[in-house]
Image 1 (cartoon, rainbow, N blue to C red):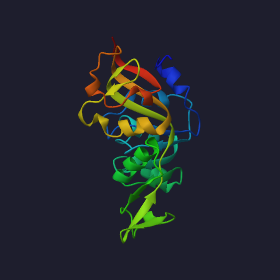
Image 2 (tube, helix red, strand yellow):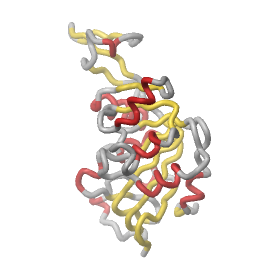
Image 3 (cartoon, helix red, strand yellow):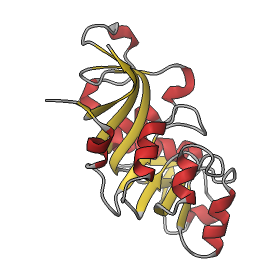
Length: 220
């Protein structure tokens, strides 16, 4: 199976109204080329799932918000993007704020085939509305359900041609869990190497979770 594809081919796996996970944290470890391709495509009304919304549309995910690509956002932090506040006030967009640890665990639950996660975060707050409570050893928890997506757009420093991935430092943030939780995972790899060039002990995400690879730098 051919995994290395172009940016145009990558966009062919997205459609209007798709749920899209985008890896990274702020400007670190984001698939900037894939984001730009999505920005300039005709795709609209996506449900965006990410840790945050970037910086006022200057770079990365924020530009998707600024250009009205999203009908819904599921994120843990939106305060660095002022444009989103105007859209919220104008009722142009739906926002689901999720505590960051809960967001990561719900994505992980989807990727690992779990029925959900139990967390005390949100008990006795508005966050508990409509959610099931579970008591364990006398303590209340909220049941947070798995969070899946149609497509995950992620970033890696190195990929081999089978999609085995290596991240540098904190680039692994949301990229690994998102790779496991979507129907289709597309990685922007800064460097693509041959199969066998990556030490097996250094692989962070196995290629079985990666469907397609876009060359984000250069290809050996």
